[in-house]
Length: 463
Image (cartoon, rainbow, N blue to C red; front, side):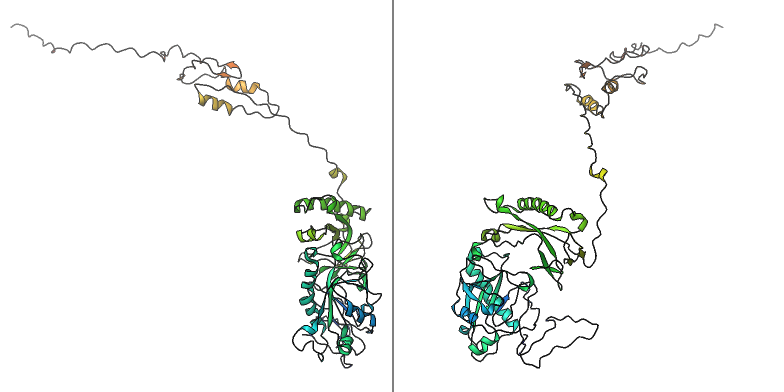
């Protein structure tokens, strides 16, 4: 656990000239009169002073410490004493001068729950206990404020809300001198230049959609190369540039649409908005990508019906490219100007339409009742290509006048006559004249005569 005292002898190690040093906490300074918490990597703003606003980021990592003059404010003490669930607080420069105002007016913090740490057992929050460190405050805010806000908003809790869960605490001086142990869990809206944005109305009654005006640039976390939800100047390193917002409730009033319906509607609307925002610059010339998301059921139930359209560039390792300057200006992507892809030739953009092939006529056959094999053989021979004349089919079915069978026809012509294409099948040619008719049986052989008698023996002449 990190603990930093406020003694004068605490000085950071100085890096060697010409070298840079990056640690988990970064370079810091702390003296008896100079102390403040800084911005979390992705969460929001830690306001310096007696009263500190500590947002909760999803990685819960503190950037470090920096100098600031803590201010003693009686207004902040009174606000802590009287604030309760549903109270709204505002201030001009620092929350140590916070006052309770009507929530319908501009305010910078809405209280979900006032937590009195004196009710917890142990000596950590006792009368003589030392103030908690920045890391311990972050841990307390996670343990106490996350569930407190969920209980406070109920079904109006949007896990993807533009409002961040944060905590106000009285600071070291009030902890030591006044014994103040109360911490206020609530919601705030982070803005540019490490300042909170004032808003009107209670969080549960407004649209919590994470949208921003067109032209807003959202920061990037250097260690992870992931985008943040903190608006920054577009001349500073950032991950995305907002080009517009789409309200799905304008089209889908019955309830949450499917992801496919959302995607089709958002993609079309974001494309049109982005083209209009960048004009006359084309999106493809910036080499950036159109980015948008869909709405989940918890967010829709909470009343969040809008989606932001943005442009950015992702890296192959899952991170995001660092952008500097607006997309319509001297844009730099990871320190280099974009290289637009070559233009598509106009003749490729206006290719002539390819005419469709004409319908191929098909030949209709009348089924044969006596010779199925003949019908099957003829159907495979009448497949036509386009512009092929039908005479070919007739020719393939009529024997050639010059070809003569080498053997006598063994199959008689069909008795009922097959019909192909409406024409009778011609009879088979007659057999050759010197061949016996194939349809008459051969002549019977002549009956055999009586068996021959004994051979005649010559008679010798008389003596």
